Length: 156
Image 1 (cartoon, rainbow, N blue to C red):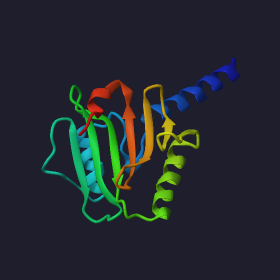
Image 2 (cartoon, one colour):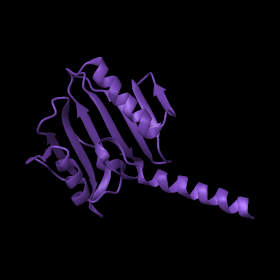
Image 3 (cartoon, rainbow, N blue to C red):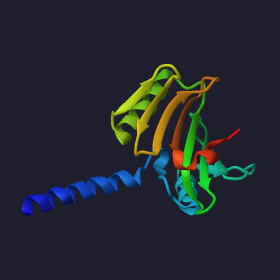
């Protein structure tokens, strides 16, 4: 009985850790806009003036490695459904490798490499994933995606 209780407790603690799912720049799924704004402004990001709909962009004030961090908001609850970090295309290979290493530390080394699309994908839950891919302009991009909110991610 005692062993079963310990095992169940450990499984519960591990399960709770999965739901927090904190990622790059200490953002988490389901953060409120107030929480996410505070987290990003504390790290030197400034909210953009051109935000529309469910997309809120933040530009770095003093980090030349990052082009933009975009929050994809769930309009029903005003919480973070996902986010995208776009790095500058002129970053070095070492800079890009550092991003990959940080993702591996945060989300483990259980990822899948999709060579046909050039993506590396971490599966966090049955709906939440992290995608690492280069854009056409050479910018390394990390997308925290939640398929429950697929329509919100249709960003032009």
